[in-house]
Image 1: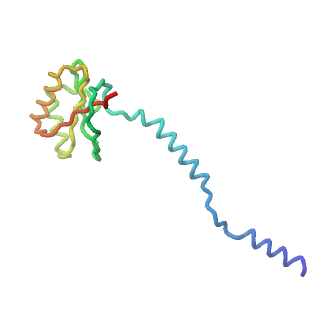
Image 2: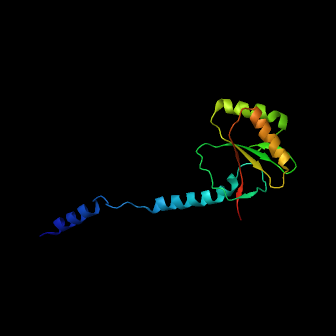
Image 3: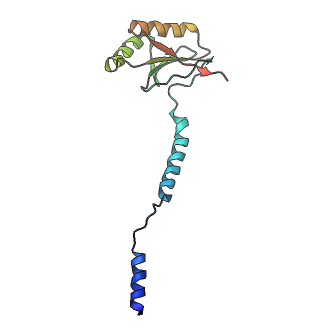
Amino acid sequence: MWAGSSSSNKWDKDTEPMGEINVTPLVDVMLVLLIIFMVTAPLLTQGVNLDLPDSNAPALQQNIEPLVISVRKDGRLYMQKHAVKLKQLAARVQAMRQNNPNLPVFIRGDAKAAYQYVAQVLSALEQAGIKKVGLVTEPNR
């Protein structure tokens, strides 16, 4: 045998396709995404900061983002994060429900808010034609 034939065999082995997938870049990307979600998740709380009442009720599973009306302890109202007057509430809810008639409506009432404020919101929602309303609570601590 001469030296040329053995070197051509080595050359063929070096050019064979690699049969493994390098997963290191995939793992790097997944770790970065995990860190991003861990940092941004606490920032995604919806609505106004309230001290919600405690309850043993199970959590609801919803696919649609609901319309949340928050009632502060001083009686101020918010739709999502926007301040709204009680007189405007029924008209705004009706306008939002025209685009999506199955839009769920939830009331987040502060634990220290007078029941009168929540009752006024319920009355305004009834005037708007809303028959089904959910009350948001915190799990028992």
